[in-house]
Image 1 (tube, helix red, strand yellow):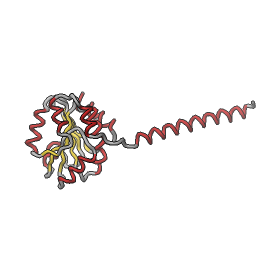
Image 2 (image 1 turned 180 degrees about the vertical axis):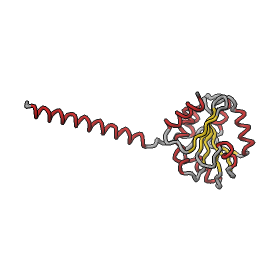
Image 3 (image 1 turned 30 degrees about the vertical axis):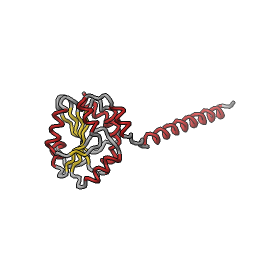
Image 4 (image 1 turned 90 degrees about the vertical axis):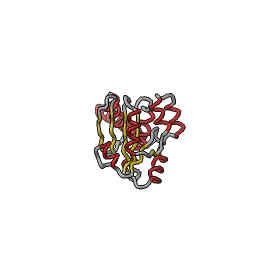
Length: 196
């Protein structure tokens, strides 16, 4: 074998390896980019069975749109004292809220035995649209209806949507403006701001 043909063989082999590696990475990224199907309410209940009573009470009201405003939310927060807490402000008309809904579904199921999740449907003018939003992708927690948007602003210190507020066990607060693009990012923030 001549040095030239040897170099061409090595070059061909390296090119083939790079092509295979590139195809594998492309297939992996295409697989990750496709959203997985939402869990059913029965799957959610089964995965969260045996949660502590205050969290189980949230799970029992999964996907409900609760009335009562600030008074009802304050009573719920008092019942959850000492638990890490994630409050997500959303609205049915909010496209980024729709995009991040699956991330909250997955996080609320994965961490729902130790972290309390609550939604606030803020400044939504249509209860029917809000309920349709809740049915589209089930989550393991209820949302409080906030027609005026005042409760959502008071909790999140923002008129924007979506906004997520994290509370640790001691009541320390962190506010995240905007949607969560991935489950990994949401879970990282939950661990950092609510669980640590």
